[in-house]
Amino acid sequence: MNPEMNSGLDQASLALAARAQDHVNSDRLATAIATLARFGGRDDGGVARQTLTPIDLEARAWLVAQARALGCEVFIDNCANLFFRRPGKEALPAVLTGSHVDTQPVGGKLDGAYGVLAGLEVIAALNDAGIQTRRPVEVVVWTNEEGSRFGPGTMGSSAYVNPGLLQGYRASTDGSGASFGDALDVALAAAGDLPRRAGPEAAAAFIELHIEQGPVLEAAGTPLGVVTGIQSVRWYRVQCTGVAAHAGTTPMDIRNDAMATAISLAQKLYAFVAGEAASNMKLTLGRWHVDPNSINTIPGKVEFTIDVRCLDESVLVRFDQQLHGWIDTHARRDGISLECFFSRTPTTFPQAMLQVVERGCVRACSQAGLAPPLRLTSGAFHDAMYLADHCPTAMIFTPSKAGISHNAAEDTDQHELYLGAQALAHVVTELANQ
Ligand code: HGY
Ligand code: MN
Ligand code: MN
Image (spheres, helix red, strand yellow):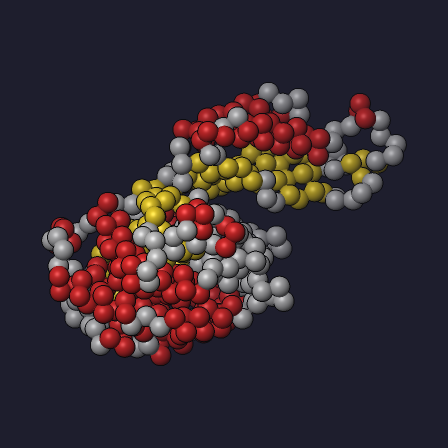
C-alpha cells in the first residue's frame, strides 16, 4: 500500500467512514438493482446481457446517466471500461471500486451488477452525508469480465492494467463470428463524447464488492466475507477432428469418430479431478460444438472447452502436463488440437487491505446484531485479480442463496446486499481519506 496509507488508524477518517456507512440507503440500492436487471431481464428472473450486446450498451448508457445525476465526471478508455469519478479535495490517486455489468448467457441480476450499483450507492451516501473525501473516488464498470461471449474473461480489467493485451483481444470472436474488436468499436462510437482515458492511472486502491457465488457464507451463517484471495484459473479449447460419415453404414472399426476422441479425453480429465479431491480442484467442460451435429452423421469435428481452477497452482501445472501427455500419446493424435487461451495464477490480497475491509464489515455486522465477517478465498475469478497487479486490492463478499450463481435463480437477501454496501462505504471512505 502507498506509504502514507500505512499511517495507522486515523480516527478522523474512521469517523467519516462510519458516517458514510450510516448514510447507505437500502431501498435506493434495491431499486437500482431491480432497474438494471430490466436490461436483458428474463421471465424466469434471470438476466441475459452479454458483453457489448445492444442491451449491454443500453445498460451502460443508463449507468452513465445515473453517475452524472450523482455529480460524477464520466470517462471511458480504449477497452470501453467506464469510470465514474467523484472528485476529491486533492488531486491524489483515486480509490477505485466497481465490478462488471456483463452477464452469462443465462445469468443473475447480482453477479457484477451489484458491485457497480453498490459503488454508486456509496457515492450517493457520501453526497447525502456531505462528505468530501481527500482522494477522488471512482466507480468502474469493467468490460467483458465473464468471457463467455468473447474469451478470455476479465478483458477490460486486464487490458487496463496491461494495455498491450487489447490488440490480441480484438481478434476474439463469438459464436456468430463477430469479433470483440468490432463490438468494441461500436461501443466506443456509442459512447459519443465521453472523454477518453488514454491508459492506466495510478490508483490508491481497488475494492470490489461481489456476491460469493458459492455456499460458504450461507453455511457459516455470516452476512459478509473478507476475501483473502482468488484461486488460479486456466481455460483451454480442444478441437477433435475425425471424418463425418453415415451412422448406419459405417462399421465401428473403421470410423474416425471425433466424438469418440473427445469423450476419451474427457474421461481422463474427470478421472484426474476425481483423484485431486484433496486439492479442491474444479473442472468444467462447459461448451461443446459438434459438427455437423446431426443425429445420423458420425461427428466430423467436436470442439469443447476446459475450465480448471485450483488454489494450489501446482495442481494445474500437473494437469497441463498430463493433458499434453494424453493428447501426444492418443491414437488420434493428428486430429487433436489444444489451445490454452486464459491462465491466471492465484491472487493474494495484502493484509493491510484485509484489515481495512474487516473494519468496514465488522461495524456493519455488529450494528445489525449479526455474526462477524468470515475470511475466505474466492472460487470465482474477478476483475480484482488483475487490479491486484496495479494497486492494493481486496474484495468483500455477500452470501449467495444455496450457493447458486450463473443461473437465473441467483439471489441474495436484500438486507445482506445492504450490509455489503455499508461495508463498501466504510472501506472506500476510510481509504479515500488516508
Ligand atoms: O467464471 C468466473 O469465475 C466469473 O464468475 N466470471
Ligand atoms: Mn462476476
Ligand atoms: Mn460471473
